[in-house]
Image (cartoon, rainbow, N blue to C red):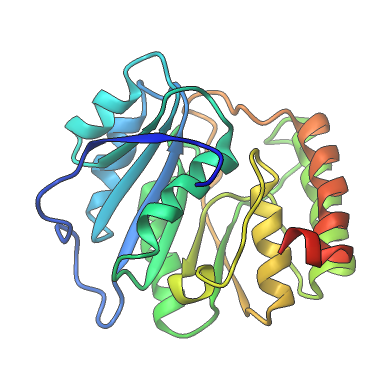
Length: 249
């Protein structure tokens, strides 16, 4: 990534420990910041479903990089905390020159269940879409009220005004995207807005979005997303990505 330096801390000798997916080769990309309590479990569990796992430690101070490496991930590390989007961009810079056909994005706090990965992979294998989005069930009585409303409203706005395809969980970071599609993107997001940036830019390029239901989990570490602030920022940036593409493509 042009505005960040990173260090490759560990890289397993063999990158194909996961199951075969026919013509597909899937690498999991996890952006993590201070997730030492959960990152090892995420890596160990998702490794059984993919061919390789890369964790980008975004300047953690709690041993996240060590736990990820011990669990079998390739680890890249930012020396300082730059944001989730910056970490994803670092990971993609490292991965997109390799032979993988798909990148599976998930978080390192166990709020994305690694065992949901096969459902996303199966949808891609069936040819349901170039971009498979894991959508959480939003129920007013089972999640924080602020997150319920911000997710519902932002997903409706993005669906109707920005991408022309229905999505019910635009802010979900659990997604599987073909590398051939990702290679056409120029991403600029540094924070959580990168997830909306991907949606808008890929939809503008004609990507078909498939939606797969996934579990909603809050038993891991608390989310670092600040619903009002981050959703407001995402909406402003969505306008930029949609209406000023020459600057942000």
